[in-house]
Amino acid sequence: MTETDLIEQRLRRTFEAVAAQPVAPVFVGGGRRSGGGPGLSLRGTGLLITAVVALVVGVGAVALVYGPRSAGPGTASPPSVAAGHGGGIATFVTTSPTASARRRAEDARILTRRLAAFGDRPDKAVVKGRSVVVVGGRRLRVPAAVLASTGTVLFRPVLCVSAPQTPPAPGISAVPLPGSSSCSAAVYSLRGPNLTVNPSTGASNEESIGRDPALAATPSSTPSYDETHPQSPVLVPIEASGASAGGRGGGGRYLLGPAELSGTAVASATTSFHSTQWVVDVDFTGSGATQWDAVARKNFHEIIAVDLDGRVVAAPLVESNQTAFTSFDGRLEVGGNLTERSAQTLAAVLDSGPLATPLAPVTQKPVTQKPVTQKPATQKPATQKR
Image (cartoon, rainbow, N blue to C red; front, side, top):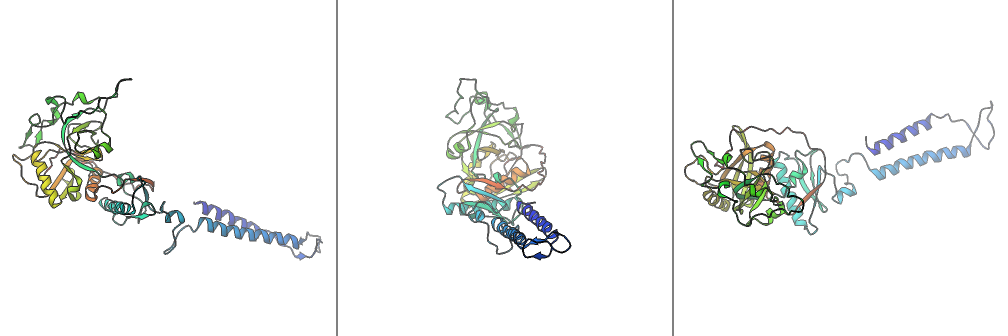
């Protein structure tokens, strides 16, 4: 029950109590009526009338202050909504003080496209004041933070794997990230010839390659550094949902080389369930298809990480079931033990592109509870054609 409902209920009870009081004949003056019963002076009646009028005015004041409980078609939005501070399923504000109206409008378009990728097609994002508000439904299907993902996708080669960061001893500074795109020793490399692939089975020896101990004391690269330094190596966490096989998720990290392609080369992306796994089906733009073929040829039988906002969400082998490279013809299927949610998130970001200006969620109604299924995969799928 809302605050307005409580106030109306109390006022209704007061009216009923007043109406239940016996009202005696009115005499002028303060005399007593025949029969010895107490009289009611005109002055007293005036006070009662004044009280009733005050209550009626009070009800009107409540209506003016709190407004109707539900607005019908054509009803003006409350001032807070009109100013862009709510009124929808979720409200986002730009974190950049210099964000232009054009950039906010672009973010609204991107959020609408991401909503559609998660199945919220009736919903859409609109600009209200300096905020972006999702309207049209009752609940989001995903947390607002997922929709507000910066959406920077970089395709980076995997160099080696590291254990979770080990905090340095007191008084000792963390070791900075190596300046060169290499592991501490060839034995830890996840590149050929140390990494081998059997095309007849599609399997590799990745699981037998140990973690580089020299990276344990190295702090992970921040998402902002990852985004702003695409041509530098980065050490980033592996998404626990299964970026790779061999137990790399759940705290492991990859040392990645300079980015060789970005998500801007993608024209569209959708999800599908193939046999035992969720995959993301990608279509590249015309120029993106050419660029991706060049990247895939260069990294044939090696591992390419899909780096989303500073986390590896997939790290498949390139054409592991083939003996020689062939063109992808502008299409790509990305797997890697993805859950339904992680596949949807990656597809939504690839399909919509990065936000024009960063957004932060400030309000959100509870998310609709929809079970997210995890389908077991027998092995790490390869990056392959659709």
